[in-house]
Amino acid sequence: MACKIKNQNGILTINNEVIAKIAGHAAMECYGIVGMAAKNLKDGFAQLLNRENIAKGIRITADGGGIVIDLHIIVEYGTNIPAISDTLVSTVKYRVEECIGINVDKINIFVEGIRVNL
Image 1 (cartoon, rainbow, N blue to C red):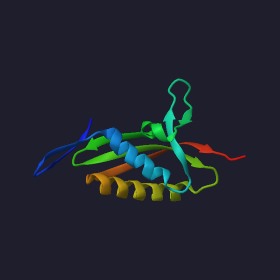
Image 2 (tube, one colour):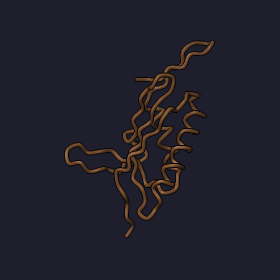
Image 3 (cartoon, rainbow, N blue to C red):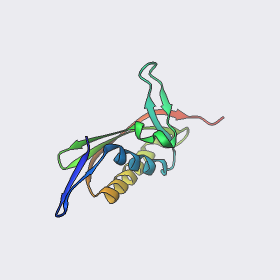
């Protein structure tokens, strides 16, 4: 389902994948985020997505006058997850609202994995 914005010139329709890509690129700029994750339903393991498939780790739903964003992320080992989450929420909310002009009501963060550098 796409988001629709009405103005004096007509109706602007924005596909959810576009919103997901904006949110994904904003999330990737945050410290401690390794990448977005897609759940492999067959074996239950999270898979790290490359930049071309970044939208597969994000779900956008319309909620009244705004949207709800679900982010499935993989974080770096040793980072403070609550601090990463606070930064992630404020960055993604600001970017999406600035680019699209629609309110972000809620951002849900699902930490699907941790990457350990050996």
